[in-house]
Length: 578
Image (cartoon, rainbow, N blue to C red; front, side, top):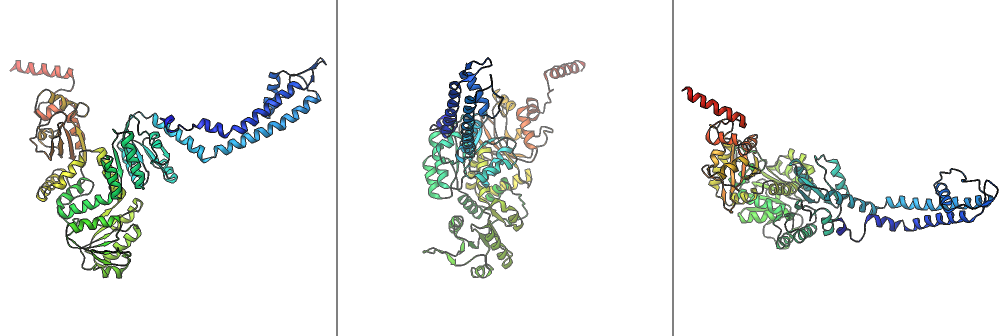
């Protein structure tokens, strides 16, 4: 892989090429010095004329040129030899000085250091022996995803073009080392180095802040590694369409995603609250203050974020007033030209009569100012605030907006839901298409069963690897229903605070919130929601045959074979006594 990616050069030959002239000068000076010592006559200890041999001359020049200086060997030199040694000393000093100076300059050369870094990075990736995800871009979204992957025990490889962001990787505490390189992820040879065609590459996540780079990553993944799934960020619709034409399955536009979410909240509030509760927000059945109202809205800013929300609001026939200093040539809505952070502009837009406001500019400071000013004028406003930088989360937490939209979190949450619980995506799509009464019923049922705090969302496949005992039980032809499996392993007269949200059969059949009497089959994939601690109990029931037997039949089975034998003898003796 390294050879194919750096076909044009290797680090070793790069060094040799840069050191060619210094090495030639050094070797030439050494050769001249050795040759001269063999030709210059000397006088031996017996007073007879004598010349040094090549080995003796090479030995003397070697320790003289390196300034070690053991003296004159094998005998005292003649004046002619000493004169030549003087020439040799200065000649070797010049050669060594030039060589060392060039070497020091070479080691500080940016290109060479980058070549060394690429080679170390490629070696680290080649030595990976477990599944890993290739994360392209280590901005706010990349950091969130790498942290989450690390907490889930999954490896990541990072490619980031910004050196400052690259340096932050070592500052963040991770359980496992993250191989990383500072390079352009849009180049196919860099993706090869990063393990795109590695047998253990589990997926590519393109999160750079440049749509065209993400498009290049998607194309490379599609052409070079067709079996590797790609999750790509795209903030422009034309780029997303281009990605889709190459077969990219997961394209994430944070602005469109939130637009869909807002439309769902306006159209089917219970579906929105259900998904919101499942993805991390506490739910209270005693209040509906968090539901966006239908009425008059003020939208501050008209960029890509606000434009998508305006389209959704138009579909829902809401009354909209837009505040922006640069109106388009064709205006389809009521438009107030000005700075939305100012009280006068907000009053002109009718903030006192509005039901909700969207602070959607690309400046966090402006959005904070808009919300504070608007609430002073109308405390009852429903506030949607765009948070551009995750680093400003403390400010937006204090702001306490009804909804804070963080693009990096939107992307990270969707990526992680796809990676960690693949069934959550079809479940979410099915809930979006469901009716309001059905969603309201499920929301009330699930929160009464599990509690109002965020549940654990996880998936399991009924196979020998994840549910050994249950798989063996089903293979023997015995029936297991969902409701029976969800009984508590400690006391089977009570049920676990756990529910199956989605069931996908091996033949492709899918069931949304299947009933308790639904029979399970080998190969079924389940998406579950559970209260804290219930996951381990259900996993025990599915993995341990004795626990599963008790849960399904009520019969307590001894733990090991010896105890089973003793238990059987005790039952026989008791029967004989009766």
